Image (cartoon, rainbow, N blue to C red; front, side, top):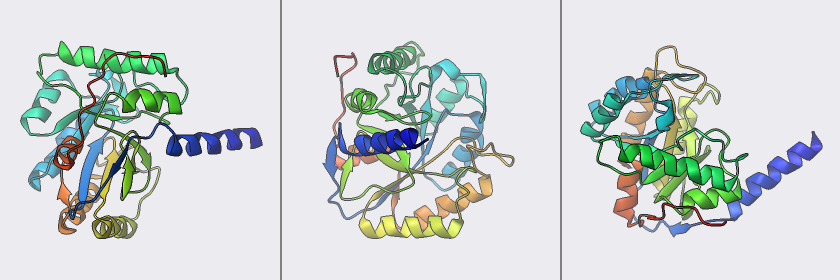
Length: 260
């Protein structure tokens, strides 16, 4: 147990300090992004509906191998759902093809799964490319962080915090809205206000949005309350790609793996 704890502490430390792509937030505007992992259908039918009602958009991370499958967070979206998402103005981001855990797989396998997801997108007929990324499951190791960071404008992890001052584009912090964390609305409101004061970038993440949400998802009423708080804070509420573009964060064009 002690060895496992020490190993976990070292992994968290190394992810925080190594393979960084640093970017300085120097603007006068706070940002908030709403993101969804695995892209269960309710993230669009409920979560997307709420975002559109408030005239904002989100980022949906998809593992294309999982389309139309049943997962712990519900039925995953179909190809027509992806088209609806894009028509509505949301962003589609990469989540690896096979939903791989970057903390345990090799860098080569992680790179291959990212490339496979891109190849599947190219043959989908949607006419877009992935520009942002979210780490599935337990997040990255240093080698897999380096792989993802070399391929995308921004890569999102977790951490239950917002990004401010000098940020790491290869491992952007996010706050998960899910039943596992049992977030309190007063704590979320405080987080949103601290992000606004710091002129930071707060990225919310969840999976399904449903009345009887999975442990990885959240209730529509709670989700809408957070959307309202974000807008009322004066932050620009935008998909991750739009924040990257507005900040001038360059696209990472590399698509094939080299030694890390």
